[in-house]
Amino acid sequence: MSELQTLFEAATAGAQNLPERPDNETLLQLYSLYKQATAGDVAGKRPGFTNPVGRAKYDAWKKQKGLGQEDAMQAYVDLVDSLKA
Image (cartoon, rainbow, N blue to C red; front, top):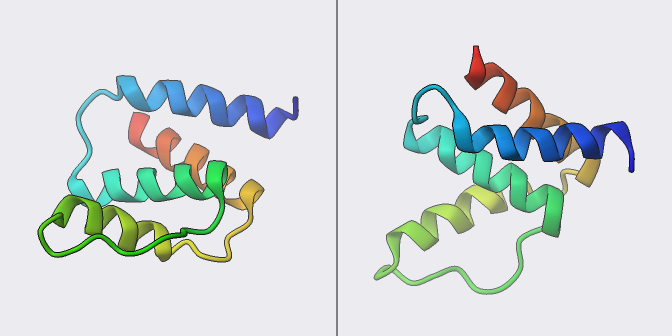
């Protein structure tokens, strides 16, 4: 396992125990970076207007399109580290 993978897994666990809950925009950023790092580019149809949470998550993830797995992992680790401070 690479050092980045180890840091990513630690950041994933650490994101569950942040000192305070991040705002919704930051939570969407965490979600989108995590999904990009673990699943790659978004696929499937955008959820309908009756599912605003699903739409927001889909849109946030779509913004990460083209970002490589390692870059997404590093961005996620950096974001979680900044939230711990």
